[in-house]
Image (cartoon, rainbow, N blue to C red; front, side, top):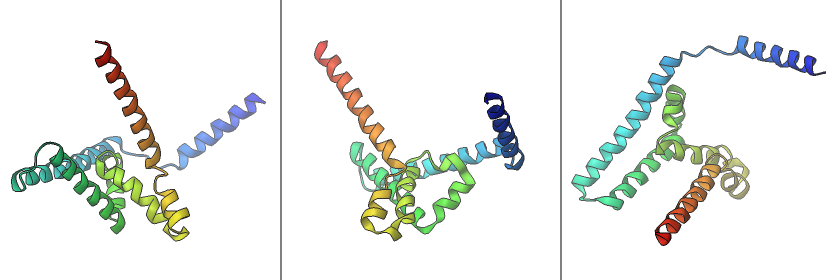
Length: 153
């Protein structure tokens, strides 16, 4: 039984390998690096703009730039532009903060026909939900460790 299962798995893997398009890894990595870096440079440009034009600094500046980048990611997703950027850049479009906005907005747009509650609200955090949960849980854990360290010493 086990040998036949291995034979089936090998046949399946060989079939997948034969029909899957080959990727040029160096080209894919270059595109991801280029687009991810460009997104980060745009964010840095907004940072300089808000710092010198509006006089923002510290947490206000970081929050304002983050909000603008999240808005741009969500807006471009709504227009369908971010999907084309993602097809070109691959992982380079997912890593920055705009990719997080895209992962929240895309399911919301896809399932909006199912209604506001069961479609939009329920599906909005399908992709981003685990990231939020583990982010909050790990920050609580780190906070407890720091609290314990500073109170012990």
